[in-house]
Image 1: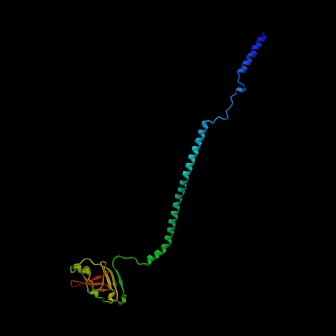
Image 2: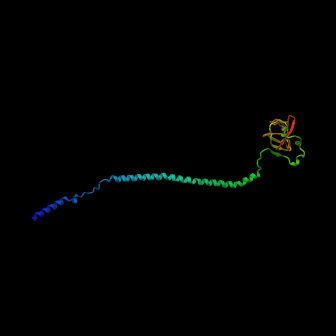
Image 3: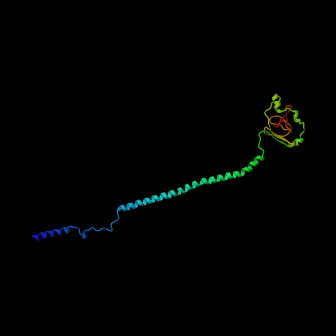
Length: 203
């Protein structure tokens, strides 16, 4: 009986050993198998990211340079403006001196007298005539306004001239307004109109 049991145990043991995987049945790794598609996908994404980052870097670098140039430009303009102000301050004293030494322009008539006060006679011929404004106020003269703008008196009659209403005249000339220039005196000009002689004084 014991022999039968031993035979059954031995048979069961052999059967279990046959069903158990052995070294020969262990699956072998195929070294020649291609890499997984996920690995290629990861590498592809990394490559795309590198390209995008390189493009962003190359695009932002010129912009940064331009920004620096724009920021520096106002400084140069400020320096130029400061130089101009300094130059104006250096020139200003000379200009002020010139303005002070130069007589300022005045409105109204300008008188240039070629003779000194000692050479003028004490009693002038002009004193014997009424002025233009007096005769016009009395109604003796009916003439438009006349202004002696420039009065130049010299010893030689040929060098004398006047500007009446911005027109130049010499002695014996006829004004645009009608009167005739009789004589240019130190006090003004003696005019004659319709047998009436009067003085247009300098201002």
